[in-house]
Length: 260
Image (cartoon, rainbow, N blue to C red; front, side, top):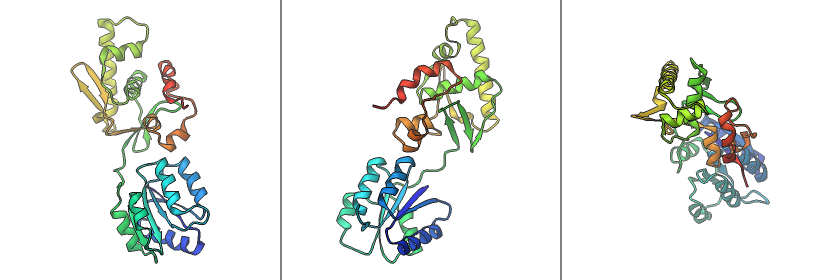
């Protein structure tokens, strides 16, 4: 989970930083004394939880919370303040917590245990599509027995979890080749190589097979392209105009990533 802490008093910021580290040492934390710097960070990185002082000089913590939520509606906002009279503002913003100073490890832990949007379990399977296509399992790229098997998976990832018929997949893989019995047999071999490659890394669960159609399970798989299409800041910043470069058919899909 990526967290930020924003407090314009340096001593108070240090105390807040230390309390968060002690309460949740495994999570990433970025600290800021300036609200504009925090917003800049949030524009380039997904922020899951924000601990905000309310009095921040030029920009109030209330204003900062609104801007953070505009970028990510599911961000958890926890106000950290010496004042009790901002409860209504916090409720209106659907904040996840309201900590009265002095800050303690226990107050931070209680807030993290009761987040409005708790952290989802870590996804083991990740499809990288910007640049060249790769499937990562636990952060490591999968070695496929055949290049065509890897391309078949790329075709399914490109469909974002939608079911695709064997005929459609064959047309995408083999392009201008006529759909024949021989081609069907070749497709079956490729699919077998794909399953064997996935079984080697305990990832065969990614494929949903129906009598004559295939799909990837988008509940198990995360993908940079899918994150981009959902407006995730990290994915938007990672896109450089390249999508599955090694496949000619992917060039026609670039229109989906155009903004404006």
